[in-house]
Amino acid sequence: MGSIQLVYNYGVLLKPKVLLAMLALYLITYFTSTFYSGGFSYDGGLFIVGFLAVAFAVSGANALNCYIDRDIDSVMTRTSGRPLALGTISPNEALCFSGVMMMVATALSVSLGFVPFILFAEGAVSYLLLYTVVLKRRSSMNVLSTAPSVAAPAWLGWYLGGAPLYPLGILMGLLVAVWGPLHLWSLAYVYVKDYTRVGVPMIPAAVPRETAIRWILLALGLLLGSSYLLVPWAGSSLYVIGVTLVNALLTVVGVNLYRKKSNRSGWLLFKLTAPYIIVVFLLFLASQLIS
Image (cartoon, rainbow, N blue to C red; front, side):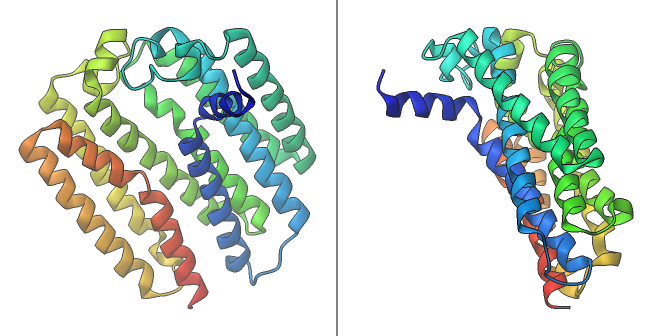
């Protein structure tokens, strides 16, 4: 195997789209926090260490998830092209690789202080232990256990940016946590046959199709409503106007899913929810900049 192909395979193991999303959450909340706390003055070294901590933590957790789930990944259509499923990386290589990444992430988080280490620990425990090991193959509400892990990069970014975590920083992380189930259930709705085949009881695979749609729309409504909780701290009306337009688009897509109940409509909801939380936070940041 060539070196370029090997690098590519390890890159796939990191789940690059997930990694980029988590890094984006860290970046946006960090800079929003710096502006919210009174200006654009930040510690460049602290920022970089935090960025690397998120990068290594998310990468290591994703690689370890691939190692733990390698048996079902090889069966599911969506994941059958991953390196462990194809055999281009051995389980032992993936385990060692993920272990090194997690050790580096631990060291970086410890160097940042007690709160960053706690955020790293709760993210790792919720994603790897509660979700991947304990609940993923046992409970239809498994994705709810991922909430602390997806919120952790946002909380870390806000904390390192200098503003107090309570109440706004906590609220932004909770908004990320609310976003997670909708995004994952939309994906599971499209690949319901995959999850049924391997016995993973995601909501769309555990209940009738109509019931699954009701759960997805409930999650959608909760997310759209929760986005307005940031309004009291928005610097201008730009946030309200922008979020309302984005929410209107997702509402139309949700109604389309309710009416057509097709995989295509579910896929559209999944693709549009992917950048949703980033767009909302960017609108909030923009409202701070022009206030």
